[in-house]
Image (cartoon, rainbow, N blue to C red; front, side, top):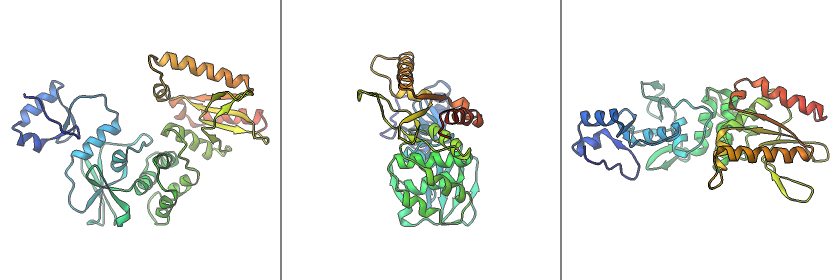
Length: 310
């Protein structure tokens, strides 16, 4: 099979392949031998190490959308490059103003709804719900409840979404709107990723004092020490306890030229030692800990009680 031109978008639709003389059999054979990857039915791309959100974005770009529909929910989030908490990307999501009841097929979910002009923007040539509308739709329908809603709003704010615009969607009676409204109250664009949002959601639901986020810490000489994910301060404003979410992505993100993950881990241990030298207690947790909520909140509560912050 001749070399395939995937164009600037990086994908190939089956109908375009047919127009270029490629048969279904050739496409299937290319998938079998690893020359092509089937992103979804009728959409192909070159093999690459894609995260699920990036693969879903290609699937959205390559789909055929009926007139009167707008890309929405998690599919719109993929186009906005808005991180979500453990999203279900098995279906393409659209909102249609031509149906009073939504419906689902094997590869797509069509939601009913009338969208105002300000609810729709153009992203990569497609009609897509705005960042604010997308965040609210993801927040109120997330299978992960309050944590999923908070992660959606944190991500949207980090990308520049308008908080008041998102709050206006909360005035409309819809499924999940109460959870979304509550999450928006504490949403913060300083939260670095959905894992950090999840941790903050657990603290809120457990009734713990809400921490500050991403505050810089300096030693007595004014030398920068760290920027912990969360911190709690005493009445004088001194940081007493910090919380750190140890997702692997954190170490990969801050790798220096020529470093590997072990180098980053060693540097992280040095950073923790410097915090402890300042009399600051460090509480750490990982992705696996988040699946056992009381494990994290119990650790935090013990330290806050020991230091008189609770």
